[in-house]
Amino acid sequence: MGDALERLRAELDGLEPHGFDALVEEDLVFLTDAIHEAKRRHAAQLAGSIEESLGHLPRLLRGPVRAIMGIPAGGGNR
Amino acid sequence: MSSLDARAERLKFARLLQVDEERLAFLEELNHEDVHAVRERVTEQLFDQGKGQFDNLVKASRLVPNAISARIAQRVFPPLLCAQLAGLIEPSHAAGLVSHFRIEFLCDVAAHTDPREIVHLVEHMPVDLLVAAARELTARGDYLTAGRFVGVAPSRVLPDLVHAVPDPADLLPIAFFLEAKYRLDEIVEVMPDDRLSGAMVVAAEQELWPEALSLMTHVGEDNTRRVAALASEQSEEVLASLVRVTHREQLWDDVWPLVAYMPDDRLTRVADVPALHEPAVLTGALESAGRINEYDTAVRVLAAMGPAAQQAVSDALPDPDPAHLKGLAEAARRVGVRDRLGVIADRLPA
Image (cartoon, rainbow over all chains, first blue to last red; front, side):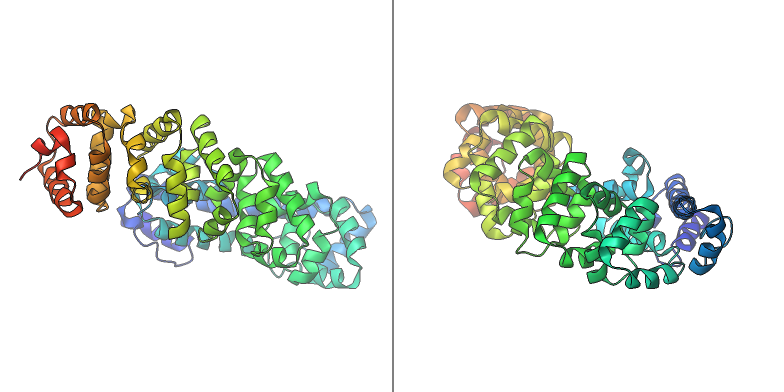
């Protein structure tokens, strides 16, 4: 229980989740995992959007545009 | 604590995390403000990802006229990326840019936009565009995003937005998802009586009472009085539906304060709805009245019942919690209705 709450606190960057200690461990774990997965998915979708945008450019221009935009090769902020 | 607020919080969190809303049912056991604080933090974390990554693109967008930037953006950038950029560029500039989007694309972008940024965009968007966005989002059934627009729209624009959504089956879910509940009073204010009444009929037909009650129970005293009077004038079918759904969804904590404002001369219509006299319904209603200190309203309802209904209530309370009987007896004395409780009075301590 303590570990599950600590994991949630860490996932929230230290925000104290007031009242959440009333939840059972299974629910705390589910919520923490769902938050983690939502962040991962959002970052992946954003990176995918950037790649999709670059895909509209002629191949030769993609490298320079990537450099101008400060996007590392192979995606955005994963 | 309002169970409606807890439910809205759970549904919004489920949408944010893209998980089945039933799987987060456990959140309704918690204080909805605590859940809100955690959801806000997750929103920040999600939308702050990648900030700083697009500085050059943001700078470039300032060099190009809005109409051209918008045309390029619609051709090249997926909505999620546009939404990310819209949250990074200066609000008046972002509003100018999105104003050139096709309405369908604008709504795609809006659905992905950081909810904290929508207020800045809406401030600078022309009324016609806001109305068009509200219509399009409603047509899509994207009530959550529509609610974000409506919730932060300037007061001068609100009547246009409310009129842009004529069907209560659309307006009620939008109101339910509104973050800024204090805006609901303004929304009810611009709804004429026939529209409010129509919303109750639709709530009964489509079992949208949680959404309707969310709209009707977050308003100021004047509008609560108006809503309560209109509710008490509804047909028996509508009132029976209200009682049924209130019982099933355990919404008595939200309904009692509304009943409290119903005028005495119209309370009989509500009090005589047969669904209210069923044992399980009565028990739930009285437990709620005790919990939220609405015994005074409860005895007014019991006193407004006809003799047959009072007999049904008396029969339906075979073994009531003594605490209820004591609470009702004290309230009956306080309100001065003990002599109008009929056979129910015989069940109360002296």
